[in-house]
Length: 209
Image (cartoon, rainbow, N blue to C red; front, side, top):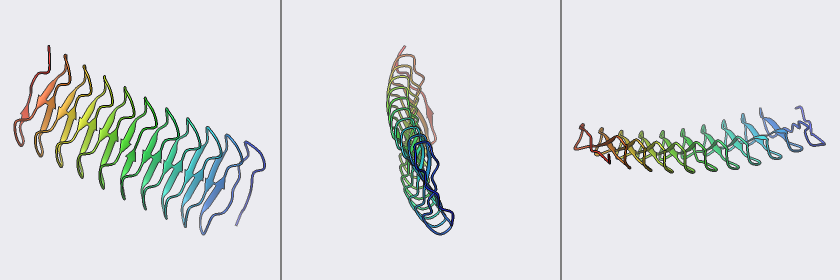
């Protein structure tokens, strides 16, 4: 097994963590650091700001955890999951909600944030104004909820529904009235608003001038 350790900042250091693992641990800021969490895992853990850091959460997982602002950070939530959690504002952050889910949660304003609502769901929740935010209402749903004015916001009304609800004026807002419906309801003047009247219906109602 190849074992290498970095003695100063900016060095690349490698240390073996287990059978079949590629493990690297950082010696200082600006390093690419990897530390193995289990058999067959590729794991990285950061030594300082600006690092790309990965830490494994289980066998076969690819996991990253951030060492500081501006990092791309991933932390695993279960076997086979790809999970990211943010270390500071401006990060792209993902945190897993269950096996097989891809989940993203924001670390600050301006982030693209995703949080899982159930197995197999893709869910997004906003961290601040100007975000595109998605939050799941049930298994298999795609749901978005707004974090501030100017957002595109979607919130699910039931399994299999696509639902959008506005967070402020100028938004395109959609809210579901039942399973399989596409429903839109306005959040302010100038909106295109749609509200469902029943299963399978497409209904439109105005929110302002």
